[in-house]
Image (cartoon, rainbow, N blue to C red; front, side, top):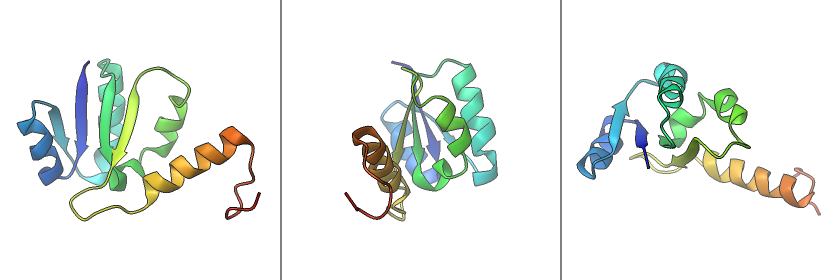
Length: 104
């Protein structure tokens, strides 16, 4: 599987040591970098939560596609809660629950 990681330099370096192609970028470069990887046919893209917040519109276009698979991970500073909130919202929509703070 063709993989890449987008994130801060420490996160990227760790993945590069494991043989994954990495892109250490600034937040404003995230949309362009993600589009580039998608156009190159990268199937699995790992992105830090901080940068994922900058590519929400692009990610939504591929939600129902088999590829690319976008995986959001915490960066070296820890989780922002962004990925957790997105997963919780997807589960609520999938099971038909209201998105209002845990009401059933």
